[in-house]
Amino acid sequence: MRKLAIFVEGLTEQRFAEKCLRKIIGKKGLCIGVFKAYGGKRCQRSFQQWRASAPSSGQEYYVQIMDCANDGRVKSDIKEHYDSLVAANFSGIMGIRDVYPDVQHADIPKLRERLRCGLETTPIEVVFVLGVMEIETWFIMEHTHFLRIDAGLTLERIKAGVGFDPSTYDVQLRLHPAKDLDDIYRLVGKRYSKTKNRIKRTVKRLDYGRICHEVGARVEDLRVLVAALDQFFS
Image (cartoon, rainbow, N blue to C red; front, top):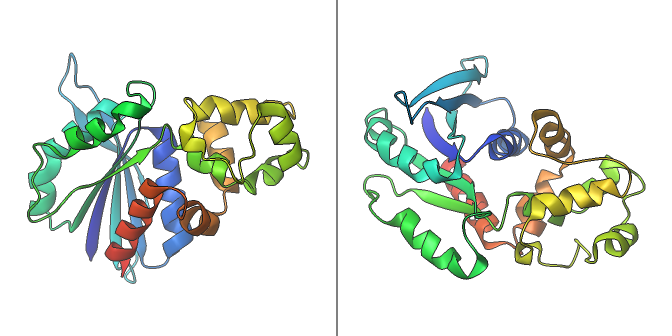
């Protein structure tokens, strides 16, 4: 069984990664374990398993999603667990985190350098994926999902309401895409926030084929994510 570890910033990235994997690979042949971090300040940091797919004899792949509960802990958690993952015969390690609010657009290259600095590259080279400025950028650019949220969220209404067309505009230029997504939903009396039910609703309505191909063609980090998953599952 090939094994992949994905360290994510928080619940949004965890839910997206899990849904994306199931849509791309399907349930057959794939087992996913979801773990959440606890502690780290006044008590020892640890990961506890939240849930896992039911095992079956036909599963070829195991993906362990590690919710670090903090963007600043993604790299440090990877570094701390790197040797144990190698010893457990994992063949891939990834990190997914946002840029907002601690890093400005101009400093993103420096952030990428800091993430790579000090990490082992053999036998596994860690792949980092950034949501610029937040992973909600990808959700907005997958603009067809808005009509599945509400029939009133046409591109014309969105453009008039928030000042840009998500089908053509590079949302990576926005400072706070999660707020933009909330502003769009507000146009029809709905809301978006980083809470379980609202994240689940949005993630469920995304078209993952469009995310991987159409949005991926416009967003470098998403292309990196798709390429890394293609390589692992090939």
